[in-house]
Length: 604
Image (cartoon, rainbow, N blue to C red; front, side, top):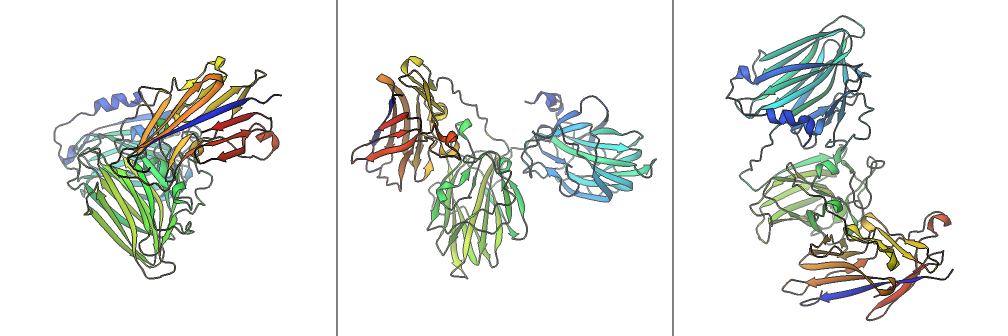
């Protein structure tokens, strides 16, 4: 077979001033209007119950995320205190179990689905098979919990089941002894029940205390009740605090392991420091949104010292850039990058917003004093300074709530060791950063139509949606179409790399084959075009728009061609391997060849 030579022509143009609605719940939303001011006795606007038989055809579908937009609980564990709960919510609190529990019920009258859990981001793949509901057996067994009051109407739904038992629900307001509402039902055959409460209290400081318990059984052996889920629905407050930056710093002992769902906690963005190289950390995949990373310019102060073996948190994600998820390994991963010695640490920037956002910074420290400063834009004086001193290894969760009057504002974070009591091992470790918004901006999915060349007569077929090569084929002299495999995720290409970080580019409005982006005042561009004789030209540009010289540590292009040699010959016979690459003073040339003797040449 004759070799088919196809050239990628990379033209680098550098311009520097110096050097370089969910329908199922629509009726409920519409019903949430404002009601007259209530007294303690009518904090419950109304209450209703719906009975569901276990044997009915098709279980009742419940979307906890939508129905519980303020908060929800889901009892899917035999451990009464290990229930699943909506991430970043605390409307339901003080869950207390009394009496006897006996595992999870095998009966199912409802299917509970969620996408914003604390322990697991989603159960979308398994919820139809799940039969969850904590069983309580015997008279006086049951559960109590509190729900925060609100001057605006709210809807509370409680999903229970029962068999051969009488179940009583009591609702009290604040410290009143007498219930403001009591409901009771007696059940013989197994069935489910949905109790719907519409509430409105005089004060936002009011608390509704709800207790559900068994008062009688007709079957002393199996008489029981089950609690499946609780949801709270209402309008989300958009009121901003007086101070633009508030924070809570919480120390976590090393022997306490917290489960952190990066995907739901970082619904805007997250960073997970799982690699010794500060520039190769894992981060949220935002490619499909065309939104730039909200967490930017991550940089080490001084040098790093590897990955810590200490762990106070388990970090789980389902939307990573380099690896899509770590579901199989997160419970055993001990990740966090170490910085030692005074002056070392980490800096990063976060885009601000006119709405309230929450950043969580997960760090550890040993025999060191660590200072975290938060500045706005170019202001010299920090808006907040947090100092903590650790003797033995201690984790820390710094929760920062912030906003600003200008969408263009940027908050600068600086984590630095200011003192050590152990000159050899005194250190700080940075594990993860998450960014959350209760009202995230609406992102319109990008239109990738037109981001390709599909004319077979040119001898080249290319799909470059999102700016990188997803599918490249060329036609050899025998008329066969040869595929050139490219990497995906964090190794996709071509991409600009700036100081070790990929630069995210967006398709321009004027040209569907051109992508641009800006980082540190430098404009980056990648565009695709076809020349005569089936030559694909990639034009890569960067332009310094700052009024001073910019000197990067490294500016490079990752081509993205898949050269990873897999286990067997059959798996890599169609891969293209660098055979000759020669860098001259002014240009680059060479070629890659596959075991099938197809060749791709490169000329820059």
